[in-house]
Length: 309
Image (cartoon, rainbow, N blue to C red; front, side, top):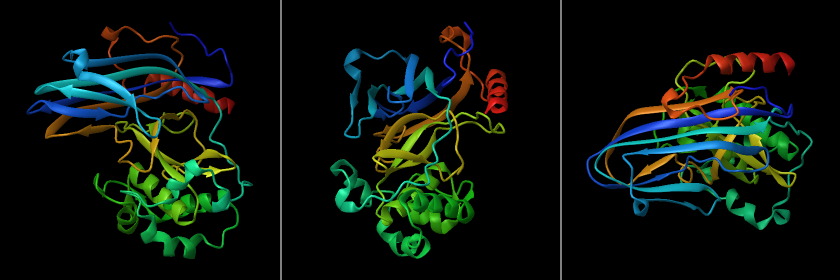
């Protein structure tokens, strides 16, 4: 079952989640949790589980206006378990660093990027515009400006809880504390204020060629900026090139790609997320259970990859 990756330009990542809910009544729910095929990201295997089994009429999926896959459930009252387990092939290259890329004038931007210049629910870029131009208006070049934003947020914000699901970019920025969601919102807000189209990204980020983080894993958030005719990755939370990102969805902000939206009251007593480099060529039997991150295999592969990088 385990074998070395055949393509030195790619690596395999095993990623997924397990969520348990307690619902007091039948409840509509949406999930944005399914990575899709895209350049540099190939789905090798996927396994979805919902317990209790739901009739086909009460579970479906659709593609939203941002191109994300959304699961739609009519969940019954009581306990609901939802899980997803995947093998994904992604690039073995670190995030690109293209400091030479210029800033595209607004009049030359493609039409599909223009709404990523506007404020949105959690990205109050209009309220940060003055500070953005004071701090970064002198920086020449599109990539250079976006990178200057990330560098500033690294010194301005301390990683740690201090926000809620309703906290805006400006509120997190002023508080001085941020989780990855807040770093991404703040990065998007400053870039939009500087007339750089920017969008919020959610996904998985395994610990590959970096010191392992033994805290419970969560979904990760970063952002992308339209530069040089494509969306380019920036991560204000970590602020250095990483390997192994698995992109789930993109949108104006977290309201577009919340991993779960529940239209009613609920409790979530269990949440588990995993993402590790792997040598697996297929998913193990369900009875083997889900991995504990970081796994021994993932740590060993990450160390070996780091020695080669």
